[in-house]
Image (cartoon, rainbow, N blue to C red; front, top):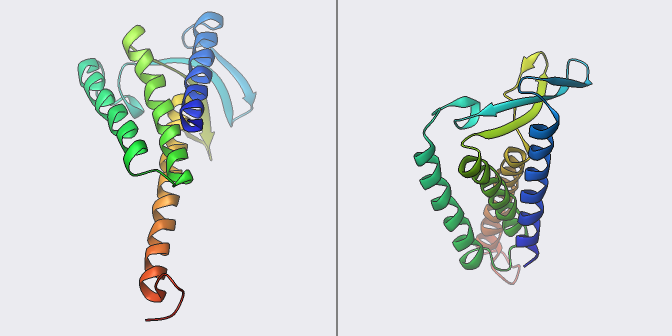
Length: 163
């Protein structure tokens, strides 16, 4: 249950921050937070990451619904007793639903976190995108950890003796 609360928190934070951007800033307006590093910039995206697949809303609707169903299914079948996996899926679920809400109601995604990494102007993103990224990183960590445990168990067995 806590994992659904985390997903809900991500959705609410994502939608609240996007609402603030839409209500308080003009499209294209930018506020400097840390010079040459971090800006809040009002931006819209009708595609996916880095603006690919612009205007393909039905594609995004279908893919997102499949992803959401897959995440929920996986949480209930494969993630029981695996807190890190459940946490990663909660972050991915919240992020997927956050951007899905934008696509359904705004027909575009509101982005606003504008960063420069060593002078590279990273594509503008939002809380949902950040949550998806955190979820994927946690998933990779969980996969690596599970692989190491499986190798250790294979080598030493359940009782810790070497085979």
